[in-house]
Image 1 (cartoon, rainbow, N blue to C red):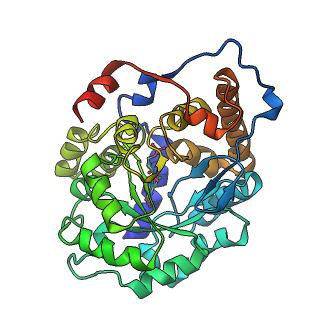
Image 2 (cartoon, helix red, strand yellow; image 1 turned 60 degrees about the vertical axis):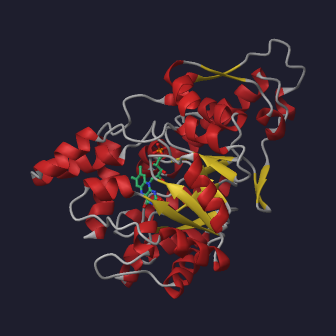
Amino acid sequence: MIENRKFDHVSIVTEKDVNAHYNYWNDVHLVHNPMPEIDYNDIDLRTEFYSRKLNYPIIIEAMTGGYEGAKIINENIAKVAADLQIGMGVGSERVLLKNKNVENTFSVVKEYDIPVRIANIGAPQLIKQKDEQISDDEIYHIMDVINAHFLNIHFNFLQEIVQPEGDRNSKGIESRLYKLCKNFPVIAKETGAGWDPNSVLKLKRAGILAIDIAGMSGTSFSAVEYYRAKERNDKRGERLGITFWDWGIPSPASLIKSRDLGIKIIASGGIRNGYDAAKAIALGADLVGIAGHAIKFAKIGYEELKNEMELFIEELKSAMFLTGSKNIENLKKRKTIITGNLKDWISQL
Ligand SMILES: Cc1cc2nc3c(=O)[nH]c(=O)nc-3n(C[C@H](O)[C@H](O)[C@H](O)COP(=O)(O)O)c2cc1C
C-alpha cells in the first residue's frame, strides 16, 4: 500500500543513515574574500522564481502526505515556509486518486501563505503501467488540492527498480511530457540520482519550466528500499539496494553540466547547510532544495524546523558576506574551486 510506503520512508530516513557514502558538495569550495567591503546587515537574499517572490532562495523539497501522521509534518513545513517566505513541495499525491480520506494531509498546506507551492506526481504514473495512467483531469485535481503554483513530475526509476514490482515502463514519457507542458507549469524533478545533460535538453524541448537536480550525494532511495526489503526479508531488494546505494550523478556535477543549457535550476540532493546552499548558487542554481536534512526537524516540530532553517539562512548569509556578495546575483558570479572526485565527473560527463 502506498500509505504504508510513505510512512516507512519518513521513518527510515529519520532513523537510519540512508545517505550516499560520499557527499560531492565537499568537493566544491568558495574563495575567501578578506576585504568584502559590504555591511553584513545590508545583505539581501530575496529572489524571484517565475514572478513568485521569495525572501530566501530555498525550497523544502517534496516529501510527504497520504497517511495520518503526514498531516502534522506537512503543516510544520508549511508554517515555516510561510514564516520565512520560502518554497515547499508536497510528497507524491498519487495516493489521493485512490483514497480521498487522506486529502487533508496535503491540503493543510494551502492554509498558509507560501510563495511557491509545488504539487507532485510520479513520471512512471504518467504512462501506462499495469493498469493505471494518470489523466490530465486528475492532475488538475492534485494541483487544486494544495492550490499549487507549479507541478513536480518526479523521476524515480532507481527506486522503482529496487522496490518489488515497481513501475518499470518508461516508454512514452517524453511525448506525455510534451503534452503536459502545454497545460501545466512543470518542474522535472529527480529523486536522488540527478540529471545528465542529454535528458535536460530533452526536458527543455518538451517545455518544462525548471529542473530539480536531486542528484546523488544525499538521500539514496536505493538505501531506503534496502531497509524496507530487509524488514520484509526480501533478498532481491536487499541485494539491489546495496548494489545501487551510490548510483547516480553527483548533484554538483549535474548542476554544472546543466547550468548553461538555458533552463532554471533548483539544486538539491545532499544539501546539509547554508554553506552547501551558497556553493550551489555560486555554481549557477536559481534555488536550493533540502529534503532529508529538513524532515528530521519537521518530524519533531515546527519550532525545531524553524530554528534549523534560521541557522541554515545565517550560514548562507555568512558565506555571502565572506565572499563579498551583497545579493544573490552577486553570489552567482563568485568563483568556485572544484577538487577531488567531482573534478573527474565534470571532465567526463
Ligand atoms: C522521506 C522522503 C520522502 C520523499 N518523497 C518524495 C516524493 O514523494 N516525491 C518526490 O518528488 N521526492 C520525494 N523525495 C525526494 C526529495 O524530494 C529529494 O529530491 C531527495 O531526497 C534529495 O534531497 P536530499 O538529499 O536533501 O534528501 C523524498 C525524500 C525523502 C527524504
